Image 1 (tube, rainbow, N blue to C red):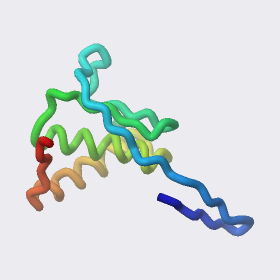
Image 2: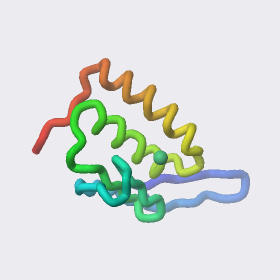
Image 3: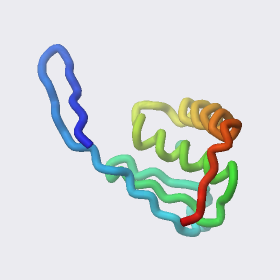
Image 4: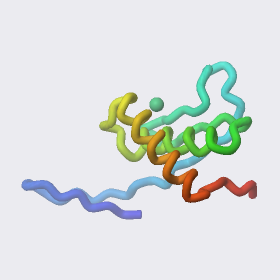
Length: 95
Ligand SMILES: [Zn+2]
């Protein structure tokens, strides 16, 4: 997907990589999810399900898509988005 950013000085065209999602056990990291901002890659603990999975996915994706947000802003935004999406019955389907 191509994005064009425009400011007063120039246009910048670049290709945003599709975010890679890795599911694995995150025991040692003591986290439900991790975001590698520079690599557009997130890791989600494979044991998560239901609303915890949705919340973690949104949280880590926000770190990738909005790297300028603070951890507190990501927590607040991910929780409210998760509540709204859960209310709309957005669920993960196992492939
Ligand atoms: Zn975070």
